[in-house]
Length: 204
Image (tube, rainbow, N blue to C red; front, side, top):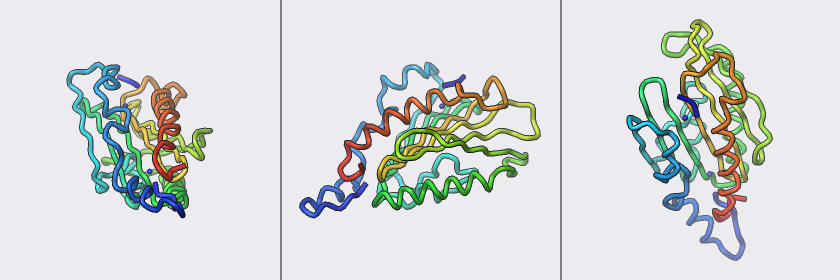
């Protein structure tokens, strides 16, 4: 199966950023919607929505849990199928653009450091590439260096203002080598959310 961040400072309206930091509006993320979930088309997929900032960020096997840990608010939507399929949507609102950019810098550094890393007893590789999306974005792939299996991860992480957006998929792909088509859904979702987060006070 394929397919699986806001506080600006206003001199006149100091309360607005605080409201945004308190949490994202209900239904703000795409996959909070039952309608948006339908294309996944798998009855065995379970969905979970969380506003806990303690939720580990996608790409945790490389970037660790520090990627989004400093966000003022974080919402995550998890789609978990069988052992071979997972999709994650995350929007994190940071105190300001500098803090959000710092999270992206951590990610880039982590990916470079994970060119070869031991995961689940095997050796895997992470690769990152810039994407023309939002203010800055990174396309990240993970694949096994020892196995012929095409099971891996394809993620898109983007920043727009003080928001960081994550769409990550773990699946069994047609090819071990990442292809543009592996990121189609993640890029589509990230582009839409990079526009939508600007509706949040102080983000853009």
